[in-house]
Image: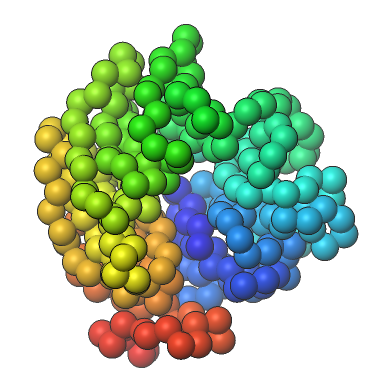
Length: 298
C-alpha cells in the first residue's frame, strides 16, 4: 500500500498489475487501475494530493519499467520502459520529483511531470527526504549513512539495512534491521535517544506525528510470525508504549486523517489505536489470512 501526504487517499495493490485507489475518509474505492506493478518491493507511490500514482516492476519493457497514472481516470501519463530491476519508487515530499531505486546501478531522480532523469546517484540502497526541509538521508551500500544538507552529516551504520525513516522538523527517527530505533538531531547528527526493542524484533515502519511530536511505528516480533504492534515512542526519551495489536502484514500512515490503514482494511486512530472504520478490500489476495473480527462490514 501507499498513502498520499495531503489527501485522504490510499493506493492498494494486488499481487500483480491491479491497483485500487481508496478514499479513506469516505471508505470508498474511487478507481481501479491496470498498471505495471509487480510484487517484491515497495514499488507503489502516491503524490501528495493523491492525483498521480507511480507503479514499478522488476523487469523493463512494455509491461514493466516505471509508469505514472492519473488516479481519477486511470490514464497513463508516462512510461519509462527502460528502467529495470526497480526495487523502490517514492514521490518526493513536494511531489514534483520521484526517486527510483534499483537493486543495482544508479538511483535516478525523475521529473514527475516529464519523466526526464534529473539526477543519478551511485552506491545507494535507499533514499529518504524530509517534508520539512531539503534534507536527504542517503543509505549507502555497506557504508555509514549520509544526511545531506547544505553540507553533509555522517550517521554511523549499526546493522546491514535501514527499515524506515521518519523526519520531523528538527530531527529524524530511523530504524535498522535487527537494530535499534535512533532519533538524530538533523542539524548536528547527534543522537538524541535510542530504543533497543530486543532480539528478534524489528520496527518495520516509522511515522512522525506533528500533534504530539512523538514517533510512531509498527513493531514486528518475527520469531512469532505475524505478531505486530502499533507503538508510540516518546519524543524526548524514546520510551515505548504499545498502543494496540495489529492483524495485518502491511500498514500505511494517512497524515491528513491522523490514522493508519492496514492490509486487513482497518482504519485506526494513530494516537490510540481506536478502530475508526473499515475498507472492504477484496478477499482474493488474502486467502488463508485472518481478517480483523472487529472490522465493520458496512
